[in-house]
Image 1 (cartoon, helix red, strand yellow):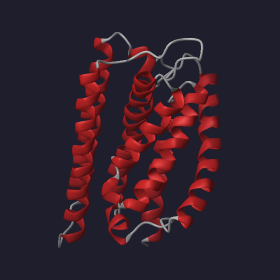
Image 2 (tube, helix red, strand yellow; image 1 turned 60 degrees about the vertical axis):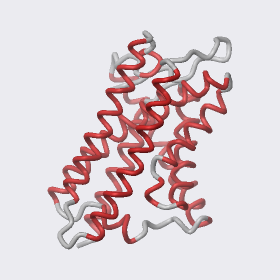
Image 3 (tube, one colour; image 1 turned 45 degrees about the vertical axis):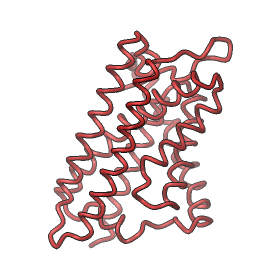
Amino acid sequence: MAAHATTPSDSTPYLQVAVPLHTVVLIVLLVAWSLLGWFMINGVVTAANPHRIVSYTLTLLFEWLLFVYVVGGVRGRGASTLVLGTRWHSFRPFLRDVGVAAAFWVIAAALLQVLGRFLYAHAPRPDQQFLLPHRAGELALWIMLSVSAGICEETIFRGYLQTQLAAFTKNGPAGILLSAVAFGAAHAYQGSRMMMLIAAYGLMFGILAHWRRSVRPGMIAHAWQDSLNGLVAILTSR
């Protein structure tokens, strides 16, 4: 799944990729997403026999439902190329995006480490750690969820919301900042400090998408980071 040209050039007007009501409904759904996360994280932590697979599956389904909702909305306006774009037509562009994603991941990880220590959010809270996979079966589903998060969340927040908010405000940086705030707020169930850290991460992804005019490198880096979190959790629990 690839996306291209998430932000119009400076010489072209900012274009709305969906009707405003569609965006309002999406924001409502994102609030529901955050509430769902809060209920799931509390349910897993307090349960005598936590069912992480159920939580992973519900999150997986909800993310793809949001993805389908976004894609349906932009296709109705004939603007799917602004959000989804075209697939890779050769191996070279794919390798270039992988290289950009790798460089971004290293730089972003270093910056987040510094910011996390400043916010005292550099390590997951016990309840967040509890949500990470503890068994091989859970890890397999976690990786599926991580890849889905890379595709769906980058499409939703950077491909769609960033472009739409830039069009509403007629300002590219405003679109980047507002979509980053929305990204952090969607993860409010992880606590205020982690929410700020995730918003900063979203800001980095937004700048990357604006610079590359593509969400493809962000998708790769996002999926890799989330998958690595699960793998590290498995290795450190043994």
